[in-house]
Length: 321
Image 1 (cartoon, rainbow, N blue to C red):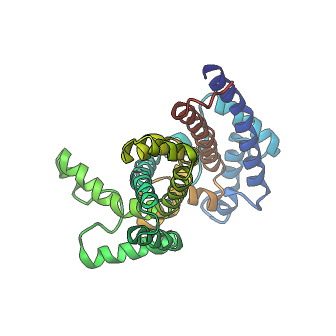
Image 2: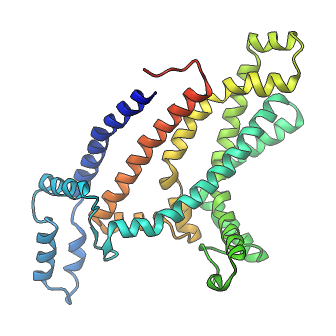
């Protein structure tokens, strides 16, 4: 396993280079750049713009710019964000933790409900409870996230039970440590439910299908014929085989932590990377877009590696060489 992990990490280097190179070139294919908007401002002289372009090598060919970006990346320097007037590293640090808090909260909400619910529906196939939860799943899959977010915010405005957006209340600094924690939880509820609902519905259907397929296998029939308790047949023999495809899906879920929350962050006012990334793309803020792309690539490769390791750990039959 150690040699396999090392090989995967070495393979990740050319993959990340390819991802960043393609992203860099596509950004330059778009007409204009960030400084075109500055040229419309009479308070900013052309000499100032040219000085910035020369300082960050933006007046050279795209391939040369990419070479300079790689050189700075080797020094752990992601560049300068022109839109926020601060280093890209600082921008990402300020918002990354907030996005991870929301995404991990949504993932826990989704997986801790979807897996048991899928098992329950498979065990009670075609019964009233199974049909009820299956109907809810189809409803959850059909509701767009942005519409569901607006609906929950409207309900919150009518009831006043939950905050209408943001991450903190106005009096957050004056609260005790425990009250701050509960204030964060209250602000997390709406965006967590919005992000988790569609994923929960899909995962519940997949888990149900996996369990039904495994429960029809011959070794499950043999286990029951031997007189094993039903809970042992389901949770020891069937679940271990039905969970394998879910681990692979879990890896893709990890890789989508940052991008999956972007739209919900914007609608609910959650101060994460979603708004920053949207502003960076619209403003053609080159280095901030590249920093975001690099993070997405690292998360994609790392999450799939974690999924492969978990898959080998859960199923001894799987071996990597």
